[in-house]
Length: 345
Image 1 (cartoon, rainbow, N blue to C red):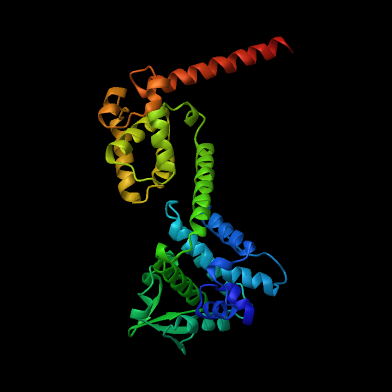
Image 2: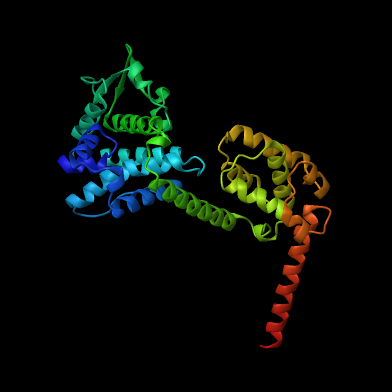
């Protein structure tokens, strides 16, 4: 298996040993490996797959993959993008599963990875199963994949019986746990050169995320027309900053008034670092049920949410007046251009 094992499973102990033998220090990593690390993180944030997609691997490609993994972990430890560690762990988990099940020798590859993890297992003699794992060993994973939940497995005598596919899922879950538990790395151990790079990746991901989110909104919602105070809260939330209670309530009520759907609002608030889906769903449902209005400008000032741009750009008493005024102005321009176009035909 050799180099292919390193490329498929850069988190493995064998891969770590290979890196030590290469004698590459974090201060002397090739530019290609750094770009590769940034690419993996970008794919993870977008919930997309990552693979090399090449027919033949060169030694240099394998080494870049090996180096990119710990570099990515350093970036992740310095970044503020919401849920990025979970997304990265999930990407590698899914990639691991694909590598295991798509291989021509899945059984042998699963056993090699299991041995690398020092997993306790025995080959099963029961018909239809591949391995038997002690129950406590199996319960050590986080059960990210619903297919790994114990209720879906055959359990008897303190052992969990798995076929090849189930075993691959279990090992993929082990992968998630290993990576997730290892992050973040102590920032004091990370070379300073990576701090600036991590900030740049953070900034780019936030810009992409904001653009993608804005494009998903209905035509009724236009963030470009938000008043300064709401635009600041909107951008802070999309950037993954932790907003105080009244800030979340204010932007939530405002977004309800401008026509955002409950699903879009849930996606919007999922960027919070302390996001819990069931709690967010409850508060969003309350906003819609009570038909909450955004606080007026005076109340925004009382909440400490008024910004200096408000004094320059806004002469209204309520954020919605600003927004509707901008919408009307935009519609007038559109109508004028449309009429002008008809006359010129």
